[in-house]
Length: 112
Length: 113
Image (cartoon, rainbow over all chains, first blue to last red; front, side):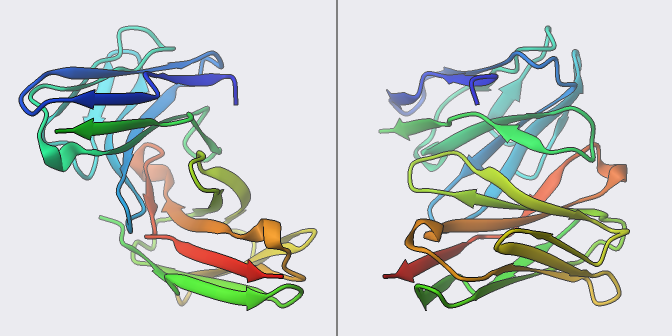
């Protein structure tokens, strides 16, 4: 959906570098989420946010940092990228807990 | 925390046949169960969902059933078509966990023409 975008769509970086993945939604959804998807696995939650300035850890938060100063943006930062963080990253947003989550197009990150 | 198991991991059917994918969950507080379809290289998209106050829901060729006592729910696709070929994910979520969903590992469905 055009309402949630991610950038960049593809990124190659080196081990040890910092990289930030951007997520932007235009629906003013309260909830935003970051997932990673590895081959053979489902979606694993990295971090989520219930509102601006409110964030919390998900299932696999180590090595990642998030912030949410504005409702529409939820950037994910890899402070010192490792090869194990090579993955496809999906951002999602939702209106209230019980409603559908809308996924962004994904960012394919390769750490060499 | 919640644990969701999904079976089978791969499923191959002939066009026109039915396909069934099953999921079990562990947290009795979970009360929302969406199913997502993900085509190769694309984002997951919701195809059907069910809430805990309903036992079954249908949308054309797709149906989902929920057994809260046994903590399992299933996706049923009838009259399968080649365009149904994709990876399907189940998920479970509860009101008490801030909207966080726990996903199954996915089922790769192949519909042979």
